Length: 101
Image (cartoon, rainbow, N blue to C red; front, side, top):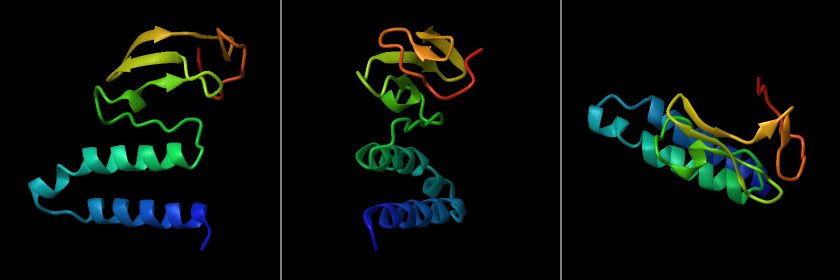
């Protein structure tokens, strides 16, 4: 099994285990699973490993994949900073996929 398939299988297993949890204390692990999945995605080269359900975690924000500069700073549903102009990084002009208007 190659690395991408192994990573996918691990993520699937973690999420399946999380969603099958019945006890409230087991659901606390959502934060840990989200952080782990973000780290795996980052290690595998994903340019946009975003987790929006862990307030305060660095992966809640969007960074330019080229220079890692902060593009969109979030706090929950609030956008604190936005450095994307016309769908591009305002620093290096790299296209950033997404809907930004």
